[in-house]
Length: 51
Image (cartoon, rainbow, N blue to C red):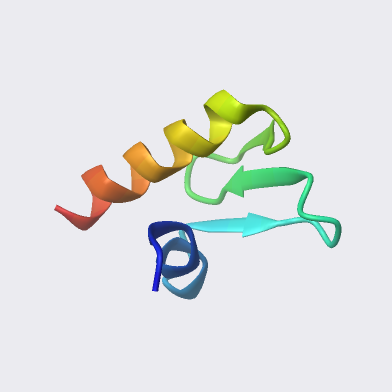
């Protein structure tokens, strides 16, 4: 399972139906997942939370 899927499973992030936007649930921040940098940031976030 990849880090993003783990974040979804643990309730840390969620996506809209089209998977265009990621929402960091505890921070209540919604960002465009179409931006390549956001994918890297999301994985870094999951790595830090996991540790």
